[in-house]
Image 1 (cartoon, helix red, strand yellow):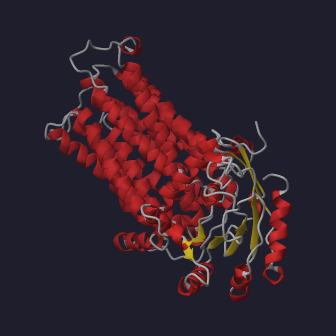
Image 2 (cartoon, one colour):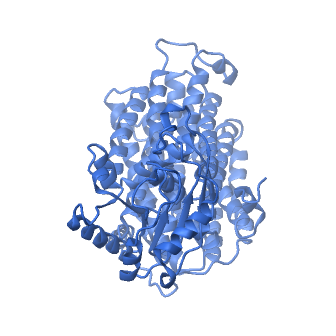
Image 3 (cartoon, helix red, strand yellow):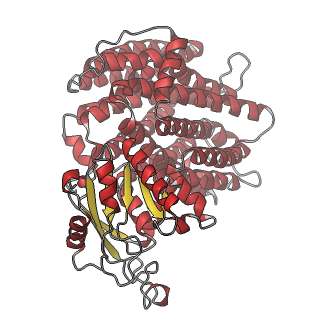
Length: 624
């Protein structure tokens, strides 16, 4: 296990007791929820003239509805109070609810069980803002992806165990299920007593109980940062998509695959194992940073495998699957399991970076309320998913046709979100190109300021340099580029959405040059990073050319630190100007190890073009 592995967090008190508390809470939620769901579907329970498939969607909506109603006060409480104390009190509420649930199970009161499902949703609503606000207060920014991924994976392992216990034990002994619910709740409380104190971020906050007004207020906090709000919308869509899929699995098992409870549990397990695996892989794929390029990658996979799940439906009646072994012996069973596992994995790629982005970019004193806003929108989307599923099934759609409709909707929604925030799509292209075509060796990433303005200066070896730097430096950068390249048809859309800044020489177009310096100053004033290539052009001999004095003019106008960066081993690649390299010699250093060395920031008072040139030459060394 490497020294930077996310699993090392499980040995540390700042993370392990919190992880265990979350795990046991998720386990209990799912034991109760899935036990009730299996009772409804497989014992053909009917309430208020709703059949089993419709009632399953109603049960899902009842659990989610409290997130819509009570997230506003939950977010305020999480910001106002010390978090370990709040966690323990929430776990005491869980014990009381599980005692009542155990009694309702013994008396087979399904109406009361549905009411308690709503109350369990309320308890989970109180815990949600605490959970995601706790992490950024106790983990560094480099640990956020790993910590979130581990938390998501643990949650989905708890869901698997919850399905096994809730789906199988309920058929054996409702009394045993009732005892388990109370036991898990008590264990969760005992573990929560080890969660370390985590200070309140806004102890003077006055909690306001006007649900409607406060709901809009905390949504307003989320809207302060456009990228945060669009990330919340993206997460909400994921929960719409995921809940619409998983709510149908019991009825899909019974009506389409003609399986039993064990087959349905197997399908759930495939989905959840995939989700947990995808969540854990996020840290490795992202290089322990918030990699937004994973988000479009995840959305593409969601649509592909939802379509394949539709195509995998039996074309004719099949024999009833009497157990998991019989189901696995049928021709399309492994394909169905693979599709569900891939839906889960790509869902992990999609959601984990979005959660980490919200935690990273939100104002700390409002974070719990922003997480509550996320829960509100998530709940709206999940209730809408249940409502849409009920409506489509009532109007004659089959469950596989519902999967196909979700795949099509996912394409439309993802395209809309990425059109509003192109940063996701641009990061995706950069991540794909850098991950597939080069093996980057990054040194000195810690020298890039995490906050505030800075100028990055780099040697210019190839046309790929901006994309490679975008893939390595996780903060968004504004690139200054030659105006004639900026105006290339088709690419202009890409450059504009990158917020690239076109520049020309004074002899070519003085107005463009002045406009470029104005734009650079505006970006620095806004706290952004601007990247320039002071050589003014791509090298034609592989050597670092003389740095032009434009960098001195930028710093004289806006005193910000300058970070020197050197790219090596791209001379002779496909995209360099070497005449005897490139596509004449395949692979032309494709898949080569590319060193990216980032030097320490230079204070504004020490910035000179000649000095920066020397630093970049030194950083590059002999790696042309």
